[in-house]
Image (tube, rainbow, N blue to C red; front, side, top):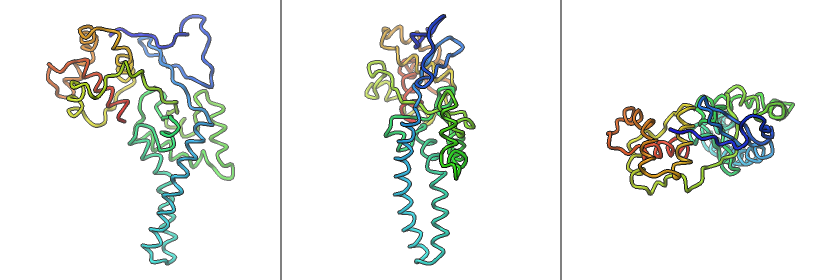
Length: 260
């Protein structure tokens, strides 16, 4: 598949991107991807939204604890368990299940990805949220997180550094370049694919590059380009040889990037 350079400033003598806005990742095939980084203000706003959600859920947990303990002192211990689970489980669960987004991050249009630019794993989501105990260390409330974000190129707090993650501003490819689920060939393939596909960095970038630019080519040319990736994908997921390569790559793209 022909590769394209997505960074118009790449090349000898080109100026570097502003350190506080984007990060550049280059594949071995010299394909360059730019990721707009989420700065401290946007991330703090997302965190406050999540904190409000936690307070509301925690209040319901308090009422449930009191109800289960019949108003006795045992309810306090049960409530502390609820608070602990919410504090460290909320972000890990949502980011693991919803492709790097909590309610607050989704509201602010940001997402956690790995430093390779691909969706995070459940282990990464758990680790980065577990280390909030360091990032929000008392009595230096959130100063370790803020200091780490200021001092790192990718605005990474300590949890991000440990989990090898970063937070980006979500950018979807232009709708003209993405196959809609209404396209029958794509819709027919999606139920035959796993609900979660762990794509490696090279496969994820190849899918993104192909889907973003596919509309530039004729249908026959798309099939020719898609064949290199579609052939092993058919074998891996047990699909017949007559499944169109273009539709298969679009379906894989939806699973990896749009349905996580």
